[in-house]
Length: 87
Image 1 (tube, rainbow, N blue to C red):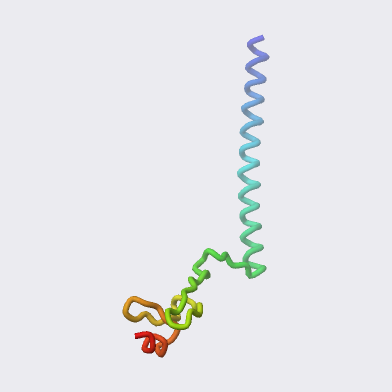
Image 2: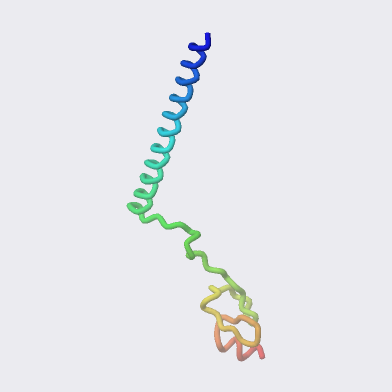
């Protein structure tokens, strides 16, 4: 009886280890395939600094990308002219 239990336990541990190895290799291969697909399709992750914060001009209330604005006296404007007209 003890011998039978030991053989089942050994078989169970062996199958479990095989399953873990298969899972590791399959997930690794899947990651590689996903990376290849991204490179071939020209896919880019939107979280890679491609999102631009939009802000509103204090003068005309138009929205524009933050890096294109004019910062004057603590306020943001879409052009220098609007900054001058506001004050």
